[in-house]
Amino acid sequence: MEKSTDIIFRDVRFCYGEVCAVQGVNFSLRGKELTVLVGPNGGGKSTLIKLMTGLIKPDEGRIEFRKGLEVGYVPQNFAFDTAFPLTVEDLVLQGTLQKAIRPFGRYSYAQKAKARSAIIHAGLSGCENRGIGQLSGGQLKRAVIARVFASDANLIALDEPDAGLDVEAAGELLTILNEMKQHKTIVIASHNISQLFGIAEKALYVNKTVRKYDSPAELKDELKGGISL
Amino acid sequence: MIDAILSYRFMQNALYAALLASVVTGIIGTIAIEKKLISMSGGIAHASFGGIGLGYLLGFEPIWGGLVFAVAASGVISRLPKNSRLKADTMVGILWSFGMALGILFITLAPGYMPDMTSYLFGDILSVSSGFLVYILIFTVIVAALFMMLFHPLVLYLFDEEYARARGINVRLMEWVVYLMLPIGIIVLVKVVGIILTIALMTIPVSIAKLYFNSVGKVVGFSMLFSFVFCAAGLTLAYYVNIPSGVCIVIISTVVYLLLMFTRSGIQKRRHRQKIHS
Image (cartoon, rainbow over all chains, first blue to last red):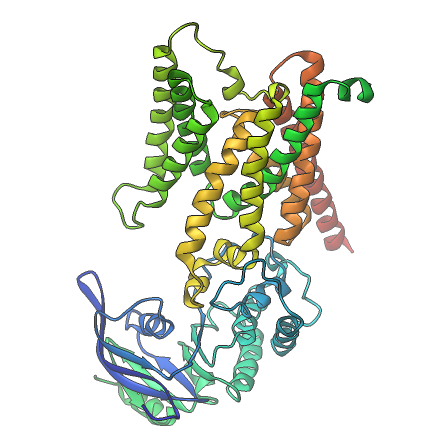
């Protein structure tokens, strides 16, 4: 694996029971690039994102990660309950937790500073002590992105982060992602491709298998003509 | 009046037991509510009755039998695969009734007079002996130590298991800890409010704290405080009117919860109307 490569998929297949979500998947992602995943509903975008995060393991093939690579994840639908007693600061601080459990561990000043910086980057200054149940949909999404931003993750996989957001909130999200890509590798599965193509370096078309495009414009042109994989 | 109450040894023990039960309530109540394990907790509490009955039959301290049955029930429910055809909820129902049936069977088979089981069914904090207090103290220390030791990863596991897994947090360990803390904590509450009323003490103080606070630490801390106030008020009432302490504790806490909830919802509605008119 080259030093600049973060992740390589080698002939990966993943099935939910009898139904194969993706198969014959081969591609690699370079560090500090923003890659957008597009494709029809049920084409396997979310499966690909989950494979990258390690939440699911391939049935066949191999996924290679750069040594020391940490993957952060922002799911399409939040699996948590917004009535949970948690402030925005508590939520973002969770991103700074290490894998190894430290008994009686408390958040250090460095962790708190990291969380504060992520909150500022996400445009949530002043909301630190607000309960997550008091946030709007857009604010909550930004808080969850801030949690990943506060982590040590150098590859961040976001599954439809703009789903359910109004135009203004989606625009703000785009600004945050554009800033994040200066420091991290970003992979976004989205339907809102026209906006993302403006800031993406690479594009993957996902429909059971994957085709990689070195320029989003290239994919855009093909999409106009209709893609067949 | 308070001096008179506190001059009795059994009243002092009852207050210590209430204090320890309140610590447990704040912790396991929050865990059970946030992880949606309330029905499972009810199943564990009722399953423990089988062990209590076994203690009477074989002549050992019933609470140890109760603890073994509670831990076993928790273990069985937690080990059910997520995609199993037999849902955890169904297993809770089975263990719930099976534990109660076994308890009654063992007590019926026990030689001599049938013991008074109301203290286990409805709680009898006024009968807590100094020796029993030591057991409750040990169980409380275990629950509190586990909670404090794993606080942050445990909160993440309770809140967002998927993210915890993606972050590489040992989710299996968290599961084990939760399914161990629940039966240990429940056994403490069984003595204070009884098997039937345990769920009320696990849910009401936490639900009140959740009305006012939005961090886990504060919810746990204040539910401990509310729980102690309810227990102290309940056992004082039980002392004067001679009805089971668990019943008094649960009635007082339910009335307070309903009053606070309706008052709060009324205030919020009024504020909302004022906002619309202004």
